[in-house]
Length: 72
Ligand SMILES: [Zn+2]
Image (cartoon, rainbow, N blue to C red; front, side, top):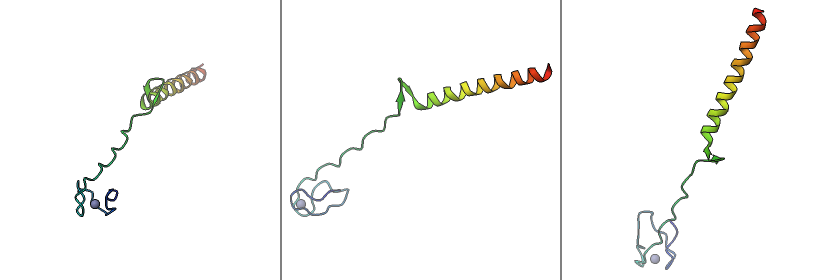
C-alpha cells in the first residue's frame, strides 16, 4: 500500500482511509489479468497438443515403414 497522498504516512493494506488524517486512500491498482498466449487465434496449449499429435503420427509412420522393411 502506498503512503497517504495527503500526509505521506504509511497505512496498512486493509485501511481504506488514512489512520492519521482520515484522507481516503487511493485504491490499489488492479493487476493485469493474465490472458493465455495465442498464436493465430489458437491458445498455446492447443498448438502444443497439435504439434505433439503430428510428431506422434510421423514417428508412428516411420516406425511402421521400418517394420515393413524388416519384414520384407
Ligand atoms: Zn494521511
